[in-house]
Image 1 (tube, one colour):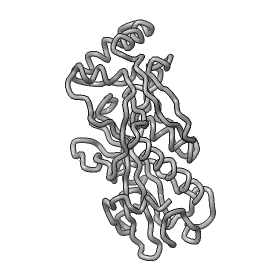
Image 2 (cartoon, helix red, strand yellow):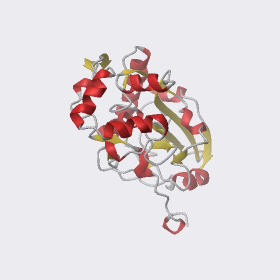
Image 3 (cartoon, rainbow, N blue to C red):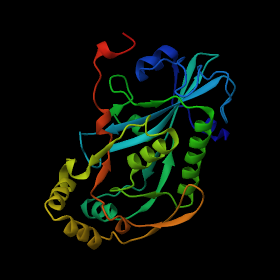
Image 4 (cartoon, one colour):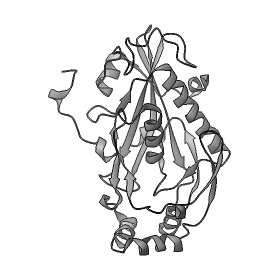
Length: 278
């Protein structure tokens, strides 16, 4: 369970720096327990270190289809030294499709993906970042059981990616969808907000935007048939939570255009007077 310590530390923050960025007090009590957690033992972490989970996200434009991403960030709060180590890990499709035709063909199939640390989006200067000063992220003060089970689940994703069994589909199982489902499963729907949008509310640009609007103009059954012509029946074997194998395909999803899990709801800037630091 100590694998988390081997992830690279991307930053070391003082309490003041961390509180200014994340809009939370480092010494606040846990969500479900009394106290700040300093007397508890967290699996794989040194004594006196308390983790805080952050669901971070980025976007290029509001309601964009491709230019969005969500990833895991861990704040390891050292109560003795009063510093915060920041680590991140996220899911990526690699290699990412290049060109219009390759992108269309990738839209309709499940393909393998990998977990990367640190998440490359911390370096993307051409995107908005949820969880960076004005734009709040989703923050969970986890108890030891939640921490153990969540980090074990992430470790399984890392191993499954190496085995070619970590499924990814841009329409129904991309990075934001997968991390959101995992976080709600482990931390509860009350602490992870609903990020679903109606699929046809999106507003992608460029050539994919033209294809999106063409599909939107079609009756849904016809649009699903177009996905079939582009290869939605292609299958992939993945490994589920408890090690069981499952064959997945976009064709198995009877309502691929119902929802899109999208970080747009996080990008509502808070006003300074609403900050607890003021």
